[in-house]
Length: 493
Image 1 (cartoon, rainbow, N blue to C red):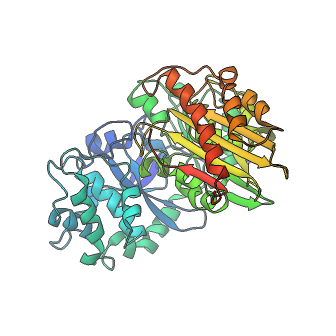
Image 2: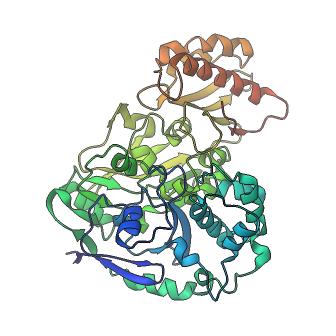
């Protein structure tokens, strides 16, 4: 069946419809807002999704037909990902009928701004939080602001402002809340079921009409760059100046957004973001919840996908070690053909994965640990929030009735060219009593499994020592009388 092709991007900016025919595959939302629309309230700070100065809201229809607004980093968000969305900038939040928005007024009254450069980003992050949770807890406020940095005000005035927003009222007059039904209708009208194609040849920008259309496109153009959340690919452009053309944008494919739980396995579509997966994973595999909330800031989690974290094969990706320890599997698809492999077999070498030309990650399937199993994830970084992993260890273990180790799976990130299991360490533990002496003996086997590197995040010696100590920690935390079944630690190094 032929697919209708449209040669323009269509979305809504604040309150106005936008249709663009001349858009480069690597054109960022931040540059377009500031240079083409002169909406300079959105600032450029880090250009890598860390500082939050460029935060805007993107409203998108959910597979269930609702509408959700999320803060995103405009500096690494490509224009091609906006088809059928509603983009909201700080200018749209501004004074109406002579009054500031409650978020803005609280920031003024509680002295949450000095130089003002970071302020629009804080306003947008707090606006998103206020719409979803009008009376947030301190923990929810801190989580919402993980991806916003300020160097002059200090966070206490901003936190006071965040606590006070709802005391100003305003929910009954906020357009993103009161006009929700109208905006849903407008966004649905933009969904014509067509494939978007702009330009041709190497510089082509494509938004597939469906999952089947994406499979057909990628099989025909296997060298195309596939972009879901762009939290990694965005930096290829802004920091490494790489040419990523042609690009296929898949963030809008509802077929990749499914999350199901069946027969003790959580299946997650490759397009599911960290934010979308958080509740389900926290409910069924509690140790993964704290891990996800330490991946980037809220804006990054709203954009980045678990499938993308796996697909790009980074040796310091946060989810693969934990998913490997849980014996997860991948569904890979090429055209109409699917195959399933163990996640640990997907990673072959640095920059090389078991993925054929034209093949893509469609879903990951995560077994829920049995009640008798112990599972833990430890992420070690220089600071607690929004930091790149130095070393991440994941452990899953089952003990036999006599107290010996019946099964153990250990996987690390940041210790090798790929996420990698510690097979020698596992072998030294299986069949042995779960005692400190056994663990200390097994720690000597780490040298057989890993030869870590020194880089800006940690030295090789530090990583080697931390890896050993995480096993010892796992032992200590699984042998105390009140030990939980699952552990995930927040602490920085």
